[in-house]
Length: 277
Image 1 (spheres, helix red, strand yellow):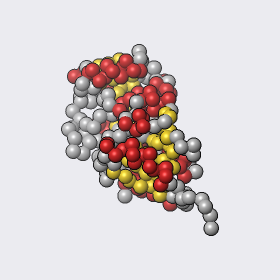
Image 2: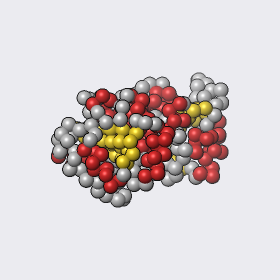
Image 3: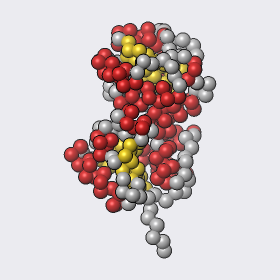
Image 4: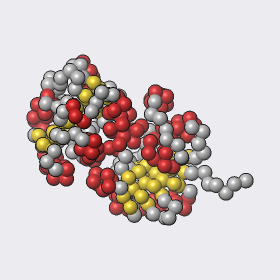
């Protein structure tokens, strides 16, 4: 017999039934033969802090966080990484042995890791990046692009004040472009990133003009349902290097799994197949 507890982790959201994280973690737990469980937990905003404070007493070593709680958990946490503070949201909570709740944001890490895996020739020095959208995902993307050394970022959002707010937060490397000029912005970019929900199943179509896409431009869409969006399909036809959004979901989970279950998982073809099956 042993007194060692089986580690528990999970994902908090409302709703949570759509999350692919439980399938991903189940695949890794089986692949690496690790003891533990990963549980989807539907939590309303009013119950969020009480649930989080109770989880360590139940054997949880940490959890992922998805919409709509990413901002709120940053306020609940006792400690936060610099990147979570800069982004203004957290997607990973670590329940430390000293009782402190540590918040992190691995979305930016997941974005860059996916970009490098899907476009091995990509480098920050290839030229400006164009980012569509100014929500929480855009904050993570912009923070990560600046962190790895991208010197110029064009940013466009349907609501310009939201884009201006990101420029104020991230500084002079950001140039805000009116939404009606987003097509021209794409023409000048070496890297194009869609962080909006446009083109997602059940959401409005992606209607930004794409005739300015140039061969060799790296184009990635954070939307992964469908896996090949209109943006990616047209970019592929134009000779661009395309990177779908599923990899970001997979890569952002790597640091949490390593912390909670003691092994760093690989994001490989078997991982993608497990999620897409």
